[in-house]
Length: 325
Image 1: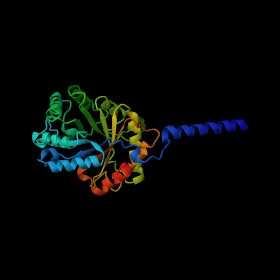
Image 2: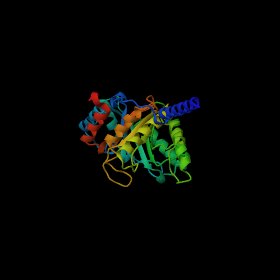
Image 3: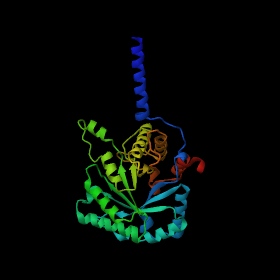
Image 4: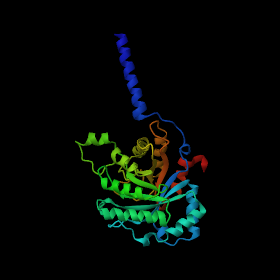
């Protein structure tokens, strides 16, 4: 009887150890700079390419990007129109911007950021998709952006038309031109299945959509904000889990974890909780977890440049650059 009890206790202990390792994960305590490879991203506004910026203004931007080890910039070139075109006026100074910016630092890459609400564009329409693809070619080949960044929201598991768009753009763009896609937070398919009888989730991104997007996108950007969370610890945990799960899910892609720096209080967003400090700490906690994939992790992505103040950049440096500052 005593041997039987010892065996049962040993089995329970072994199961708990496996749960700890593969569900909770073993955690390290390495500082942020250990995971910061200088491959971070930021979104900047369309005024940089829609207005005539001076050489000094562009130089100051580039210096700030370099100072914060940002080498990937999503430049808003204007919203996609209903027919799939973009008004040329919104990016009429892009060639000048790219030329000047590259003069000061040729290693920073600038991607043309194409955004729109998903409900405003019919991606099942072949002509609309063709117009978007033509626009991508013009921005990449004529303006010489380093790639295309899609931020069409929301896309979801069953949005096959969006995947067709990515496929068509990938087939037309030269291999060296990167495609990046911003996606809402990853929700495991098992969770969707479990909650299906309780609540009807719509427009979710499970491993289905993430993997479909990853077939054609070089970079996947996980937008971990507007979560409606009002607890700091819980928000850090969500960022941590997104970092762990998506880097593990997409081993062959570059994964950026995007966190907010804006202060606008609105439904579903609490800037006292969802902010630079908590977001960056969540990324560090995620990368310190045994379950994350350091090889696919690219870096942090900040939304957005125009909302980030000196205090927030100081928090970024303290958590993410540390001894590099």
